[in-house]
Length: 171
Image 1 (cartoon, helix red, strand yellow):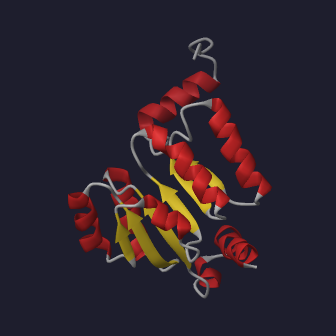
Image 2 (tube, one colour; image 1 turned 90 degrees about the vertical axis):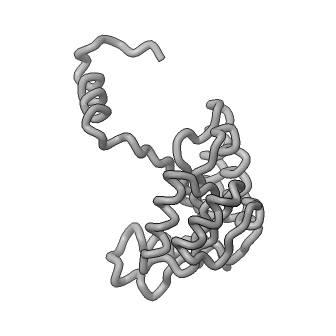
């Protein structure tokens, strides 16, 4: 079963060291290779944990630039080609506008792929709840990247909020 094989490989990432995982690298697709997606594509292209890298980007100039930096297995302007590719184990979504996240996440999860998405998950709570439920039902890994989380000013705001030093947030 291809899905259980994918789960086994991703569980090795989470539960074992890189030495255990090197025998079973995964194939990753990245949708959106702007600033953040480009950083992720370059990181994947250098990682011994990644066997194949596939990228999708609608800006042809940027697609060619990242293609030249990362030497991907596939570079396309059609993100759905990545979703339809059964060889891919996981999808990283780093696309704009943010309204594109939900349909991309949903398609990736429904096709049996693990998903990492740059914030936000979607533009509504209902859509977020739906894709979280799909991931859980299919036993797929699904996570959101919060790239600003560890910047000192945001860490300070988090601390102040948790300690109740500024009152109750309203939104």
